[in-house]
Length: 363
Ligand code: ADP
Ligand code: MG
Image (cartoon, rainbow, N blue to C red; front, top):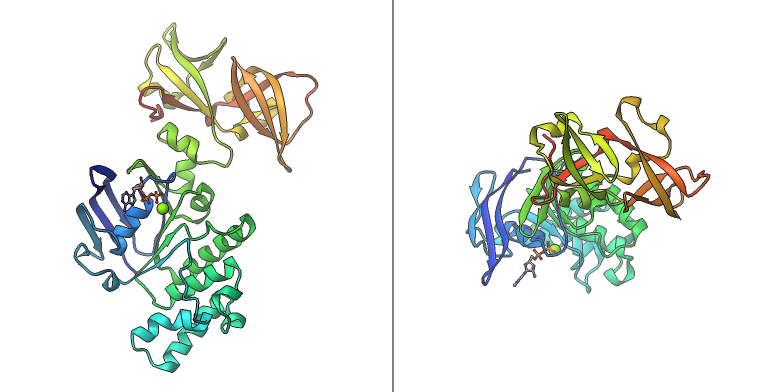
């Protein structure tokens, strides 16, 4: 197990800065996910830690030992990639055993380690097969087995589930989570998939264009996004964003959304100013059809026109129009008598972002 520190890490390819200034500490035993859209610098950051990419500036420490000049093979990390990179001519057993053989382990010692990993990953019946005789999920489990037997200080995963179908991804997520519970090895996991990040991470580092947009537990980044970018990146249905303006009437602030004036909740008051252009964010699950679904002191009724309905299975997405803008509500009831309705916003669940900085107004 180990603690990993990135200190003022920068990476440029030519004159393009792809990692701008990365400061982060992964605590011993922690499961950290680097999450962000494609091209934001996740793999590059991971590869600098693994020693597969040179570091333009800054320092990387593992257990307070400077790694910048340490050879990749001496860093004691094990990496699992999207492409499983198994040796095609070797059996599952030989693939898993390979690193131990190189290290000069005895045959019985190798066997004990391989059997242990195979049993944890449910690969025991497959040990004699070649990679081409395995499904995608099984191949990825072999790749994990190969990483596990090395008992590395840190596990690195780079989009390991991207080649698998949705159902298998769900199962493998569970297995990776279980494995971390058992082994407690410090883990850094790179993905562009917010569901993977939310289900696996102790903490998520959300990256955008080479810098850190936010760091937090899954609950923190979901409930208290500090920017419009994070608000819209996290969540299975994207957060609604409505254009609104902050106005002041008789010393009280209101959020003007068309003709509706919403009293400004306390948490936004410290950063309020008159005529500020805002994005009002609200998740589809926080837009309700019935007032009784919200405590009466934090209800905001708002006139809406229902435009369309989309059945998702257990829930329904209602596409509505509010003050000339689209607002999506995710609900379990489709009982609407007409196309005109009143929707109810939960004031505890609204987010406000300054249009210029795209930063949250909440304090
Ligand atoms: P991510 O893993 O977040 O999708 P990467 O870390 O792979 O992103 O890449 C970050 C940026 O760096 C991208 O714009 C990519 O095109 C660029 N990049 C990555 N590797 C190289 C390279 N060897 N040479 C030039 N540009 C690169
Ligand atoms: Mg990548």
